[in-house]
Length: 102
Length: 182
Image (cartoon, rainbow over all chains, first blue to last red; front, side, top):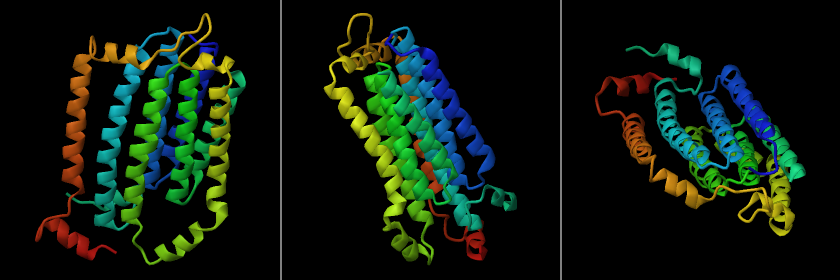
């Protein structure tokens, strides 16, 4: 472990996660909702890395790599969905998806 | 090192809050890049240099560029040129630049200061950084199955993004809807 207390890093992760959660709840622009999801995933990765550093173990960074993969796949599919939403409804407002019909 | 953590954490929280409250997507992405760089500094301070490097390469490099591409594709309106003119004003980019400069100064201090090398590769007694070598051995040893699953996930993401992102076919119902969209 390094000299930094673990609780600081976990606190930073919690703050970032809450910020991302608020972003998802407050913003209606689907691009900003995706950005908020990225912030939340990043905060989760930060928590894993900090906890791994606490025990001097590599598992935290392994989990961070997997979270990174999930984030990359999620943002690729999410942005493709945002593009389709924009093409079909002409806006990036998440509520515009109500006008979709099967 | 405590001060370095506090500065990086403050920059991270501030830029994240600013990013999520911007009305312009590109301004938000500028702040988000600085936020990710600050989190990378925090990773470095916690003795995870591989995670810090990947945070910059994959998050700030690849994912943000994806966002920028999509914003470019969505922003083909008539107000694009007016927006371009407004982006050249310094008050748009001076905020992210200043915060990034704070991180740069902090990183320079950390790299030159001998005692702060505790965060990096060579730590003093009692500290131990988890290096890329250890992560790689763990990743391709007990976690080999997870690596394969991650490759499956990336392939699924690739196929899904291609399928969702292509233009609708000629004469398909989606085409007509596109025509009558406002």
